[in-house]
Image (cartoon, rainbow, N blue to C red; front, top):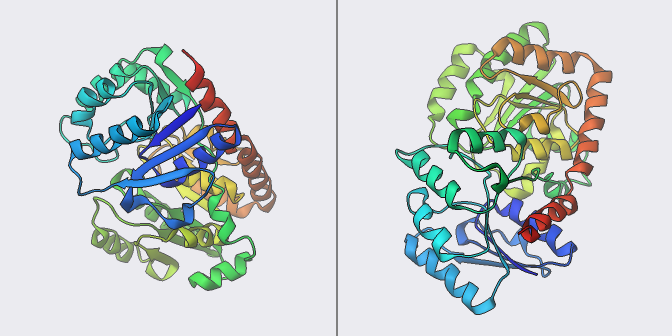
Length: 362
């Protein structure tokens, strides 16, 4: 079987491609040049960064069509749309054996008319993969997609980052980042968007400091569609600036592991999300997680097992959940162990086997 994976998060599609290769699948990847990194070079799979952000929509489509015509593929597996307002019209018509993984059922930033376009797009597809039960329910209830079109395959655990820090201790990682050695480190990691609810974590952190002083918050990630100055003003207002590491910048792939290696606990105070690669990175490092109970997060953060789930925007609930883990060493250890156990369940060979079943079905 020959499979072409098209577009999407380079880390996700790389891990999936290797899993498929391990199951005997001939895999190629087409991705945007701007998203490619030489760290993902692997002679077992073909990675073709032939798309460019400067390309117009029809140039992108033609590049994909030409490569398909040249090589021939049994399955086309898209992981991201190019333009929701156009994709519903062109992609299902132009490409056969088309499978789509809806990593974000609704885009993080929604433009006018996109939800309607997505409704048409989803209903024109024959197979859609989602990461959790709630994602499937959203496609059915909000977009009117037929149950028999939707397949649930969990998001795999991101173990890739561990290779860069496997010989580094927690103390060494903290020294490299300039983080304190004598505090419990809370980590908020990833692109900073409005839907990520970072301000609620800042408020919860201020309250936490009243009861637990041996703690330090690290916030790392590039802002998108938000004002960093607004967050800085809030930090000053809450008087937490000297108790906070704030790095609102892009984090190079080879440095990501340093942050997770340094952390004692990951916090995901999201308002809305489909699923989270940050959560799947956290479990691979054996970290407890406190997260909002939204999207498919409840299938990675098992309440009272490897973390706690709280209501979105619940400052007191967020603070109390973090406090419980920080104060109870035995609880933190058991949650860490459970996260590592989940990592084995979410390994990419398992994900690949389930994906192949979808490829072969029908």
